[in-house]
Image (cartoon, rainbow, N blue to C red; front, side):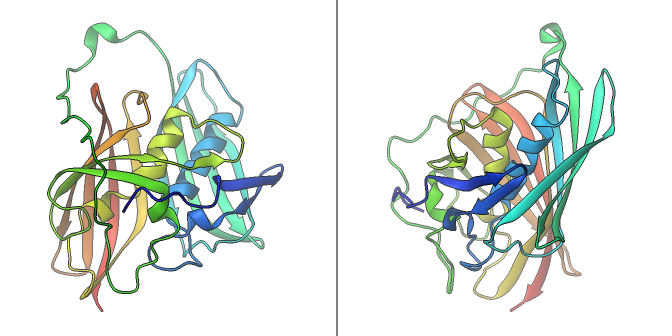
Length: 266
């Protein structure tokens, strides 16, 4: 990845209640016609934060199920409260294109309370490097001018985009929805689905490695634009992999993302 700006000012442009035009910035590395999992995950998080909004609760967790590749086309987002509550609220949502579901999600909102006295100390990650990565993550046939160009990446461990553990600082240069500021959880959700890209468990010139879901759990809201991703991927012997990513800001870890991967020879 590099610092080149993308043409789109936002991943999504609102066209009506729950309706959005998908910009080219949403396109993932596999195809210019299919979206990366990060922007739609964040769009669902946005809906979960706004559905029957309760200022006394914070969105703490979202689980995203990717039924099929989401096309870079106009889409509809819907959400509902599945289980209301004073302490916890469960929400369900989906993203549809032409009436067909492509992504499902569930989210938990948890009541805010003062637990500072019980808060767990965390390790502060390395500082943000002063210069962005000079080389872009690349592999044969990769589409680099959508989502991959919407992020700025600065590596702190390993080598981004190669097989093996790696860690990076990253931030998005694109709004989620045109004309809106990102919420802390939206900012985390945009990048959380990239853990398996930061730490690729296989050589993508020889293997297919695609996640079918992403679960993001946060114990506090992140602060600031930069998010540190410390990722590791493990591969089983029968076609399944798992990527685990610790997410931090400059004060320390604030959450974790887990992805289940399908692995197969090219």
